[in-house]
Image 1 (tube, helix red, strand yellow):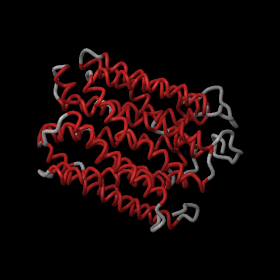
Image 2 (cartoon, helix red, strand yellow):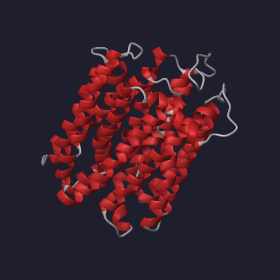
Image 3 (cartoon, one colour):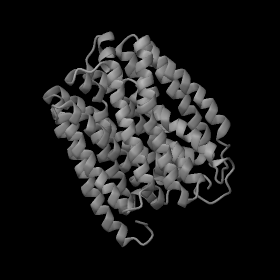
Length: 404
């Protein structure tokens, strides 16, 4: 399909295309997770607190969310390939820069670079799936991309902690940054050039705002976007403090904390398989179950005093989170009448806004109430997302053009 969603023949091998897109989503997750296993070490090295280090992730995500609002409509006009490659390079610059940071304020500045990278690399692979694959193949492609994203905790985080144990957190981030730059060259060689069907000499604020009108004028689609934001507050916000939880609350070593992130990855991959291939119930119903599960199991992780129960909760919360990502993302992809980049980058922006809010609230709750406060406060947002999802079901029934 073209950048505006019209059918066209495929121009590259689908399998290699998905490998490139999966590599990008893997880096998007690594960009987000990279400092989490090292939060206590970084805080000690830079003479600051764990809660403040968590705000670096919050700022990165918030920057991503703001930039994403412009990136979506712009990439629908200029194409998706080169911006995606640029975003992957930016991931490398961010990680290498973090490895060289000598104070907290420099890390804050680098969060802007990381936010730019996340705005592109997290969302554009799904825009390319929407633009270039037939509708009946999109759900499985989305599932595959989320599986690659989920592999970051399974493969990336343990490797980072292993390299960090041999050297330091700086060595681990530097190595990851070099890998990201190399992956950008791979993506450039595999993803074919964009075929443009429209052209604008200038892209102004009015054009960017107009690109979102088909989404916000549709109560079903806008409800799905809002529910995406709210559910992201819960688990993705909580992940910011997951490493610190198992370090400080349960006394695990850095390498053992890396294995906890492996558990999140296994849960997420399990969720991607369920969300993309489960045929036992409608996508909307499966999404509803996932949203409720996110809230329940996040509470289990952060409010439990038993390590084994918390680890089980990590697996189940990660599984539900990815099921929610795949099902709601597939619904949004099917029902949107806006451009592929606009739609999927806005979906990613909602996830990022929710994640930023979750990281900020998580830090506040941690400071005021401890880890148990995170387990009680953040799940409320997942339950609110479930309520909104139920309301969108009625809007979908009233609209014959919106498949359920």
